[in-house]
Length: 421
Ligand code: HSE
Image: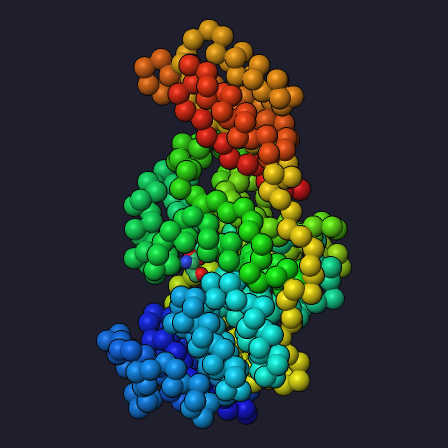
């Protein structure tokens, strides 16, 4: 049995969740050949929800890397102070485990280079989908494969909110519930604006394709513009709405994006509801692999963190971090992508309105795959729902402006359609 001495930095929900899980699931952990010794905690204040017993608490987190420990578990969150703490730990010869996707997304290349120089490891399973395994799976189990595409719902809060809206609930009520359940980030705009999912796909893209950390800017859109009525119309056309994060290696460029999309109701991802994260990894040797599980919350995150501690204890000290930035392929410009689109248009119920819309689309050589016109929304206002043929993203804003410039059009929103063949 190998004993690993651990120093925890941060003493909030995630840290106390890990502390409790190490105690409650100790049988399973020792069965994996590891004795985890929580040697010290760095926390500015006590947490009334968790008593750490005799474990010494240091009020300055920067004292932790100086203690007699093997690994620092960074759970303070944020970016710049976390970076400093991680670099100090690495330079003190400590391995680092973190659940902090933002710090690895923004400073990963620097952190891994420093870790390799100092011959320590930096592990971050819990940073992507909490305990649902994907980071080590990509690095190890799938290592012999060419990874063609990674796509999925990487933000539990967004999936929770969208699933609830699909059931007819309001956005704000569901967000409040996600905050109460502890799924949402301290600043929930990170969840609902797509930033959290973007951080996670950035990390996976770095593992699979060696894209840099931080990556060059890429397209990020959240779920705030989705209306619950969109689910009703999407369903009529055989779709539901998910927030997807996607990375793909398409020969000369890396595709990286995070945005809502209509996905076929028949697809694997469409059927994962609630706080569940779901990922589809398309590989050359195994084909498509599906992974799903809770991607947020104290217990799931604890599982991811402890899995890294076990991995560290059982792994070869000589094999260090996979270095990012080995691949300098550019990130594909978002304007170069092509999609089919869902258009929701509120129009005056007058003769010729439909013709004026289709004329604007035809002027841009955009065809229509299907069209639904439903009952009145209000006085003489009808919703028109279109599914367009595929066209290039860089035409989208222009065509929206053209349609909105018609006096008879009162509102327009669009959602991309993700092909899930
Ligand atoms: N706020 C995140 C989510 C949880 O909702 O998925 C941790 O990444």
